[in-house]
Image 1 (cartoon, rainbow, N blue to C red):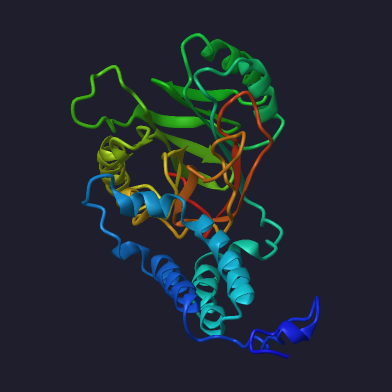
Image 2 (image 1 turned 180 degrees about the vertical axis):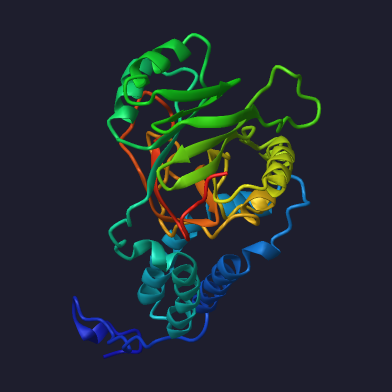
Length: 336
């Protein structure tokens, strides 16, 4: 056999050394990506929001979906046979489970209390009557609706009236209740530069069998996501400050806030509101967009009460899914 291997015969190859787990090369790249992902999950609040495009709020809006990168990194670590990358993938896995692991646990049966449904019914909904029938069939004590147009409002009022004899509407938001409503008034959450005809806030007192509860219905301005402006949430954030101030000034307890807040509870842009409320229910209940739900931007939040379970409901004619929340008081509410 010559030095060029001519004597080995056809089809024979030099034996390859067995592969070993590598701590070098591309494995370090994967490990670095895993550490970066873990840091984004664990320290998402450190991502600046003052930069153009508000990257912090954008990240927090879709934070749960970062978990999809964990099995991908783990699979690549196996393919590369990199122990470093495999161990590093445990960091984002632990961070994700710490944030959202409770969402995966089976929920306990809801305790007796109040059932509230929140739904942005959509201003282009082709079947408001059908949507109203679907909402009435939930048997909820309270129904909060947004994007009520003047043309569609009569259909909702007519269909819901038999089961919900009490209702109040302010601008494009409304509240339907099985229980009497009192102290109804609009809540001004208009951001700067918006005209007086823009009404998206409502406050009422619901006189339930367990006592009185303050109910707020709100629809914060939409955000704009695009290459030119990034995550455009300035008006939404201004409106959240006004809503938070109204809640802070509300003397009544317990308090329920139902609304399309146009972001998730992880988004720091909603801190003026969420910081004044109880911790949200540990459920995903994605509500938007209805065709492929990616985030829960329809919220049910409470003060001096607890949301024991929240879930999304089947689609209606809206681009949002309804969400239903079971609410209990920490102690029986007292009438005034």
